Length: 89
Image 1 (cartoon, one colour):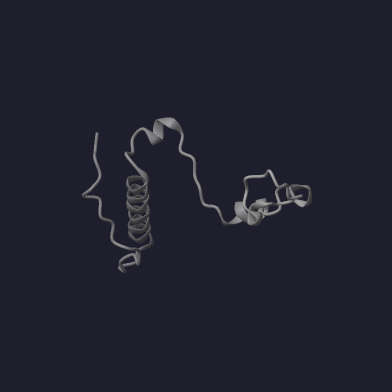
Image 2 (cartoon, rainbow, N blue to C red):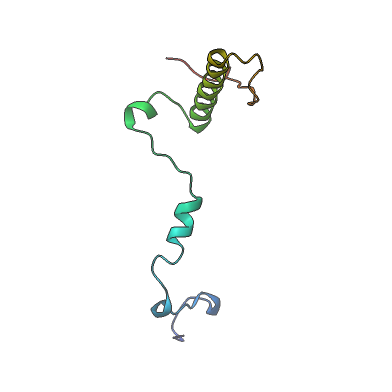
């Protein structure tokens, strides 16, 4: 498939007729953790770190509420949440 007038280096000369469309699609989708926020929700957060901080705070709150309702005196075993960098509108 190589052509002498071709400007590509030989290592980039690939025969696409042997390619398989979507060969790794399923594997990629199973390992992907991308979440798309709706526009009204995304507008409330300046960046991904702020979204993650808010979700961690919500998870910590949910764990504490579960401990209150279950009668357990143990503290939740989640990571501490630092929200001092969040901008509140």
